Length: 378
Ligand SMILES: *Cc1c(COP(=O)(O)O)cnc(C)c1O
Image (tube, rainbow, N blue to C red; front, side, top):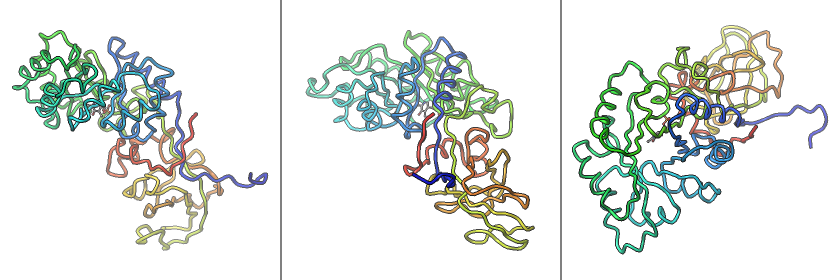
């Protein structure tokens, strides 16, 4: 243990606010009480920890299902004791994975002919110990995954008549532009989905976070929130348009990324800071060195002026982001001390804002959090 009064330093730490997570879940439930929730946990729970987030939701909410991208992620959840339905959002890529899906009681998306054939033609039949639950994904205009609308009747009929498939079959699509309330592609996508599926009495699902927040017609039976569960606004311009920000949506950031000041340095007007000397001070000032860098997942492309929160004020990032450190301009009146804790994003400083300054999106910043970042859960 450290001696009394010795300065406590924290290196890059992600503080996970479990109350915020539950608040965000409840907000979705409150907004759309009639729909079920499939909580999306891919990419290590958007950087928050796959098992951690699954356990918090599973213990404290009635989350109806979890969604992951890959089989390995689903198996980690089962190994962690998660018993809720788990959907593989891209399905399986090899027929040999289907018995693993069946044994582990997973559900699969079917989005192409190879996946359909693998499932309905698997031999010998005894490879599957039970029927598999299927989500049929239709491409309504995103043109990434999903069957063409012309093929819908064929796929639906094949699945319905297969002994390997458990009914009902959930019908789904994914929205390309739901973050933009003015983009008509969402209306076109939803109209096509309606046209193909409205006569069928099957569960339906179209809404990601942005669909939940901005497109009531997309809600259907199953919501698929990812980003907003983590307290980040999925809407366009959330960094500066207050009607689209997290506060307006009544969601709260789950991750707050922090690190201490580990050094202070005086620089004079005309002196530069950091690699490439890409920032030069216009005046005498105090530079603070903070124990976080791109080796932790703080974006190297964060520009000069990116806000950092320290001692209840915003200070600008100055100089290039290094692997283990960043530098900020604390100003000539600084009374900050070594050990003081800076917030890089989260409570008090939305990650949406940092994403803008780093020419990226909040999704990428969150799932770039590296394993060496300490995690504490509150
Ligand atoms: C990732 C994903 C989601 C969640 O998207 P968010 O924008 O994070 O809410 C929903 N559905 C599918 C199919 C996905 O791949």
